[in-house]
Length: 60
Image (cartoon, rainbow, N blue to C red; front, top):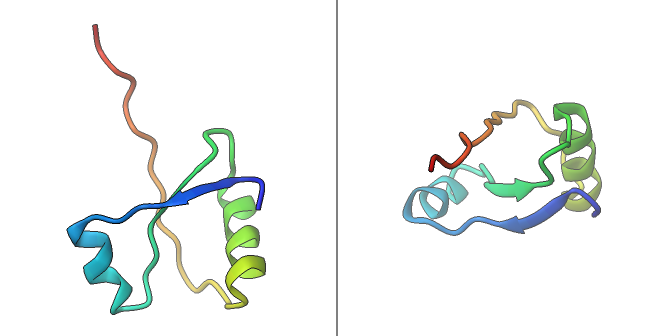
């Protein structure tokens, strides 16, 4: 699993686990198609939908 760094464990992400929704941080240059492929290989499931976002850069 080259692109997936680690799973995120917050109150919201733990609540989403009950709905079979997983939260993780990935490499910054990864595309949505790559992330979908990695998740399908690692977890052995078919990805129906996926949300992604990029964090804003830190200010000075």
